Image (cartoon, rainbow, N blue to C red; front, side, top):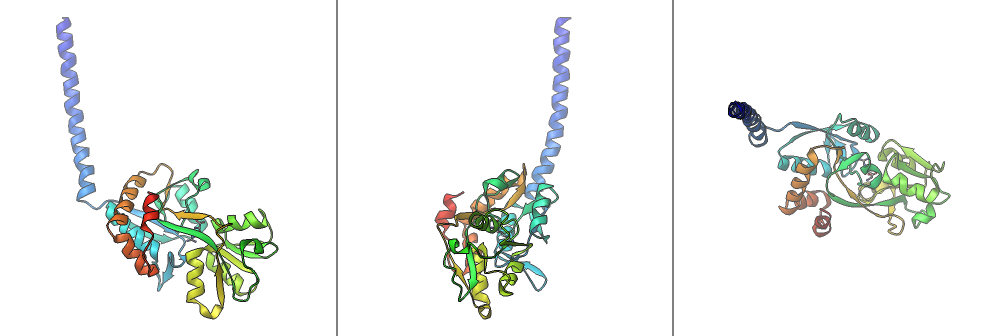
Length: 274
Ligand code: ARG
């Protein structure tokens, strides 16, 4: 009797095992198939395309370094991307609410954001910089005290200016995007703009008739790194980090970087961050 019971238990278990094995082999072939042969899912990438040269509108198209970068990385990871210009504040709402897969917007990785979002490994070194009219008496970040400064709302630019002028200072004018902050400076409503170095340098250089210059301040403005931003717990992070490592190593990153910035990237520093 006892033997029979053992035998039937073994039988039941082997039957279950065969069933589950069938299940896995089916699912398995489906998922590995979709990774290798079928196109993987198209990812919804959200951005604020008013931050040249990283992401901006050109003849109705979203273009920039970030666009080329995310396309290269996604391709490497086997995904398609659909980039949508939703704006800066909405981008964070979407990633938090998991209605988009990736935030791509020259987004600085920092501890505060890491509490709510996941980030890829760093892909770009940046720091804040001051943009002023050519004749300005402002020489450093400390000189911003008592001045009206325009920033893009919710950026690290706002944070570093508030470190100097005080949180909620009425002298910090916040705008929905960085182009509006620059417009305020040109209109005389602010004495300076603080935003990412590459952005303000490109602006001053490409718009000589605006007669603007940039001021760096490594004492007050720390090094920052950009990352792709994912909803917390996103499964994409591992795939994308692997792909970022690949494009850094195989020359793709340097090629894109050179196209946009006409110089070679500091790959050593970036790779040390991976
Ligand atoms: N790097 C800064 C930050 O993360 C500014 C980024 C602004 N990007 C943009 N596309 N408007 O806060």
